[in-house]
Length: 118
Image (cartoon, rainbow, N blue to C red; front, top):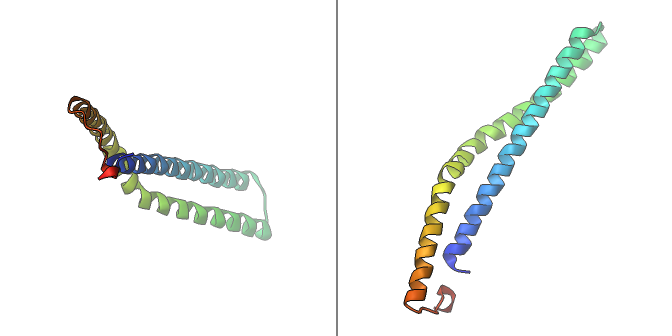
């Protein structure tokens, strides 16, 4: 495998990885949002005293803190995801076109050497 192929595969892997991470973070955020809403609905329909109120508040606080951590990670990873998602498709297209051109030229000029052999 050529150096360019190895680098392109690393880029493709990064693209897939960051896309998966972004999707997982978004899934986790939705899960936590549903949990917050569930707590609100429980509170709305429950008659509770001081201890019950404290338990609801503590549960809500814990869930909101988890949500904050996920939200902060989404904010940090979003620019990376945006850059990769925006620029990978044209890079992939260009890489494939240039690879085809190079392969055609290798056949036309009967080149058998590889970068690894130099």
